[in-house]
Image 1 (tube, rainbow, N blue to C red):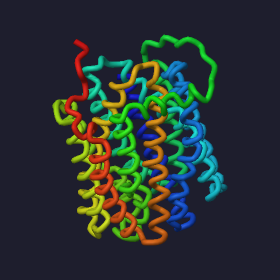
Image 2: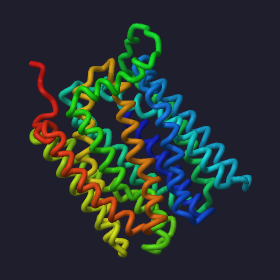
Image 3: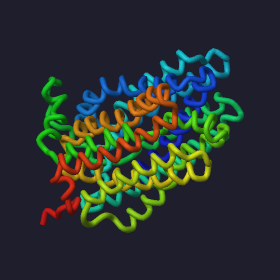
Length: 393
């Protein structure tokens, strides 16, 4: 429960920070390209550091690693607070802090993913992941909405609250109890750092699940363009942006409650691919909509479908990976997640600069549908996967 509360608090702060930075950037420049650059500046350092971070997660105390990541993000939010209060915040500063956030999250993601299986038994992991994701979705719902409303009082108010929440999360992570048995000391080499890639490459089901998330969300993500939709398409202000950012989490929360009570028992592979297809269709509907209620509903559906895919994929990856490899495998998974989110934001911004926001989102949703069909043919064993957890008895 300490871990759960820490995730809720840190996710709330992170979502508020992303809403504030996105709106702040678009207010300063008014360019879709700059919104995409914010995502790219987070992704590139994460790409460079995540593999070493996975090695650290397999050899260090995961709770302490997470606490240090929270302290770092609190310092970043404090810098933004002082910059906005002193009126020296500009485009370059927002890009610099995006790079720093990417560096902190590079170490956060592998340790966070690899810690969960140490807190619950294997047969409870799918339900625990759904419960944990549900808590995070509560934060994702409340964070953007809260950030959007508080932004009315100024960006510095949002940044200051984020800094305080990150400090609270740091304290919760540091007191999270889990068994830590340091593995035998070994030199850090290219082979040990890349061990996660080698492990995944030899297991097609894990490879298929992780790569499916990469390409489906990379093409179908529309989060980076929400400021454009809020301001230029749907004609709502920061409060509307906050609600749109929280809409996918509404669907994800409802689905996580259902999956916690009724976990997926059979036909896991087919269910995951169906969820990805629904996600793509909902993205197309959102892209074409000019009504706030319909846009909000489409994002809710996309969030619910994505939650099904996330729980199945994360359960499969964690259950099929031994503990001494979970940090490095989670690091590779984090790279794919980062690519599908931050790099997806850059892709959305770049295509929106050429095709406009509607063309970018609709094309991406159709691409997600195509990915689901192709991956079912490329990874037939994944599509036929029945149960996530096989009892050792």
